Image (cartoon, rainbow, N blue to C red; front, side, top):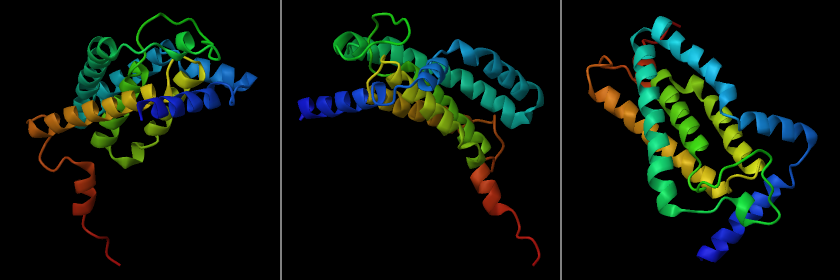
Length: 197
């Protein structure tokens, strides 16, 4: 069973890494997979949350920091050394990394854990109108497969880890005085009175 799952993982890996290859794909996915490209815009958005976001924005800024710290530490310092999976660019002859890659373990994807954790925190605190963030998170996750540094299961594992940790910190924030009662955006919409018809 494990061998069959590994076979499916490798087949999907090759389908994306080789089957999707194109000049525009190389440019787009290498850009998406490079974390430093997001540092300045995300830093500005984080400062904007503190400055103009009100209580909910400041809570989200705090939750984002806690989520990213947790996803990074759990993925990089707990799960990766424990699983110790070799990255596909070093394990499969048909896979070549499209950017320099250190010989660090592969499972789970830290990029996927971080960005799915941040997306989950934002959607949970700001509402489903921010669900498009999952699209960006998915694109970053796919970029890790495309450039040859993660298997699909690495990305899926990282995404699940990020969702769980992001949701956990949001739940903790709701149990504390940080957020007023009834601050769940879904509940707030349900309690709004109907407009006169």
